[in-house]
Length: 206
Image 1 (spheres, rainbow, N blue to C red):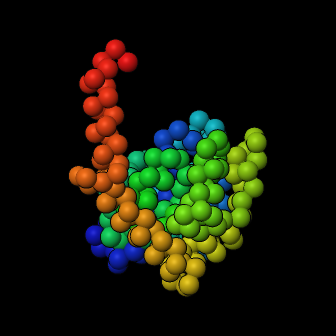
Image 2 (cartoon, rainbow, N blue to C red):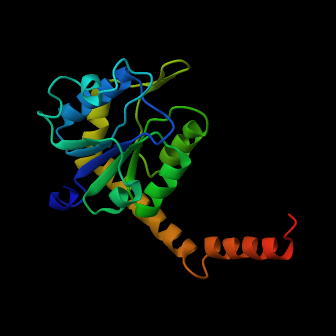
């Protein structure tokens, strides 16, 4: 499916393996995606907090028939992010997802749920500038709440290649290059791992 799509044309959506969006959040995101008219791959598994275990009953009526996308219970995330047709990642900003997205140079659209995800979101958007800002409210009980019109706005902005998106993509690609150099033989990350391995060998009791 991805192989048939143009370069950087697909939105990937996933909220990780631990945190489940509420049915209300799913519907709002789906409505925004539908209005944006952009193709997508959405890794969405049933949640214990939904009234139904059928994902189709949580999505808006005729959502799949009237959109250009895939909704799957699981996706090989790193492979999806590495695919040339993937252009943006709507994410909860879990640390693993952030690292994987950065390593592939993919622009992020972060909607954090809890804990360090909020800090990660700020790093992604405000410090590293590899993500696009989303207006949301983080409710202590319901989790993040965002208007469907805001989802539509930010998705369109991510793919319509205005100055905002272009600069964010440039930053994302630059950071991916830094990560690649760091993890290659002789890079800083590689050297630190080798140092850790040597320390454990020299001090096996630790």
